Length: 250
Image (tube, rainbow, N blue to C red; front, side, top):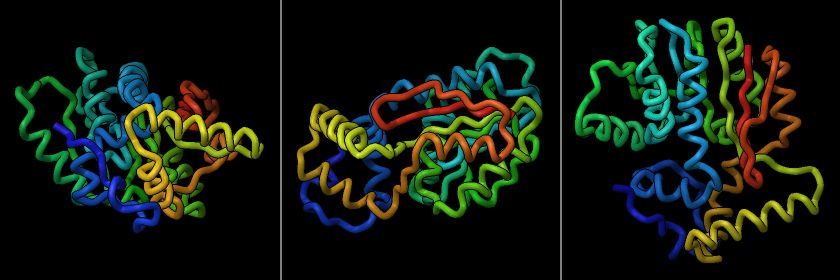
């Protein structure tokens, strides 16, 4: 069971840069659900999307998989489909702490479903992944941690590797060009965090830690990037405050 996130309860408003280390891994499920409005809905919906779009004999990539919530939702979403053959799910993350913990969690699951689509956690850099033969790629609040000048290349490589009819699911925190809208969205998000039990000190501490690590962009920028990468249609299927998710079809 995940511990309660109190990492920033005693570090003040100027902690070091945010890292996916052992401390974060221990509280990650609690942290992400109390920090991202709608996260508990986004994850199972990705599993639902997978059921419709994953193709037989293909690869599904969960990039920046953390503790595997999305990978497991996809595996569950594909349950009962008898046409998938050698389809497999690869969950890639560059945090050893995350991958090790996810591997442990998989090993301790009460009862393995031998008919489930195979799921493999991998320690690696998402920029090095081979996307050939993929029918679905997921970036669930992951692209925002990549340098701005590397994002176009990654999405082009994903689009090039996807099978015809393949899809990208992208979820991101976005920013807004209108200052008043941005101010409102930030205030609403902080109100949400307070409702989840975070103190003002914790909110300020987390924001400071993420400031140079999580680089947000506008929805227009994300959509333009996906279209330029070669996706023929981009549909926003979720938004709660500044947190959005899109489906991009090849």
